[in-house]
Amino acid sequence: MNKTLFTLAASVALGAMAASADEVRVYNWSDYIDEDLLTKFEEETGLKLIYDVFDSNEVLETKMLAGGSGYDVVVPSGTFLQRQITAGAFQKLDTGKLANHGNLWDVIASRTEKYDPENAYSINYMWGTTGIGVNVGKVQEVLGADAPIGSLDLVFNPANMEKLAACGVHFLDAPAEIIPAALAYIGEDPDSHDKDIIAKAEPILTAVRPYVQKFHSSEYINALANGDICVAIGWSGDILQARDRAAEAENGVEIAYNAPSEGALMWFDQMAIPADAPNPEGAHTFLNFIMDAQNMADASNYVYYANGNLASQPLLEEDVIGDPAIYPDEATLKNLYTTTPYPAKVQRVVTRMWTKIKSGT
Ligand code: N2P
Image 1: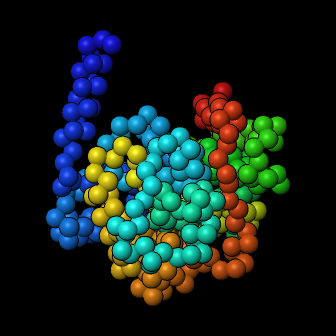
Image 2 (image 1 turned 120 degrees about the horizontal axis):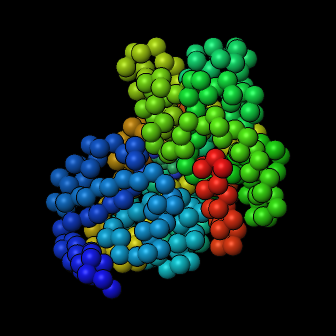
Image 3 (image 1 turned 90 degrees about the vertical axis):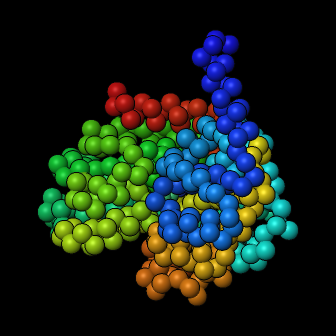
């Protein structure tokens, strides 16, 4: 080990040791909580909260598989969680320390069991869909009043994208979501693990690549709200937050979210405790705080994502619980699909394909 590496490793180890019992380190998605809850947690528990954010499952996964992240609570989506559980990245929850566990919603728990049998390692924080956000005025200006804003044709048909490029299009930098969407567009199984099927997504994405201004998973919120871009493939609540930011700015930008008619991915973001968490006790305190009905309602009311907490539902605003883009009705639900983790060999193919698509070569 050279000196720099040694110094680095030593300071990482020291950093982990320095994490004390009165400190909790949480690593959550960006734009995913009402910040008032962070202060409330510190006031109520006397614990110091260190709250960092990410916008990509892949980034979180790299940290989880390497170990020594220094975090006490992290929030992978179900498919990623499943893979990381198998790799030994998490510790089982001690439900004896989670007095609010009974607030959880069995409908969601029964779905997340698919990724985490018996929900032994995780609780659902929030869930949502991956779809299309549009600046209604600009898109209609470019494509006409009958622009297919509710269809994947908007973003995967090169004829549409060529025109939309002028007003700006962002795609999520999320291969495990964009590739399934491209497969759904051509009528293939979005959850296919067959390399030959997955390969069919490549020409779809390559054909529209020249018209994608950026692959990024959080900048699109402000970019849509400010009118800097007119289309984003993004996450439901983020696009609804963009809608609100535009409305608050009174800048004449009208943002709409649609789960595509060809089917949309339904995902589940799960709070879990890393196997090597410096403060597992504090992690349980944080999870229990989050599972409080009022706290969870405050979080959902702020970020426009549905949660896995039944007791929070009477406390949700009507524009949250009553919006089928957030709490899907039966008809919307029928049009949602879920995915399962790619086996290692398939994952390598997907990662290579994604790098190639993004680089545009
Ligand atoms: C929050 C995005 C979380 C959804 N900004 C991605 N699983």
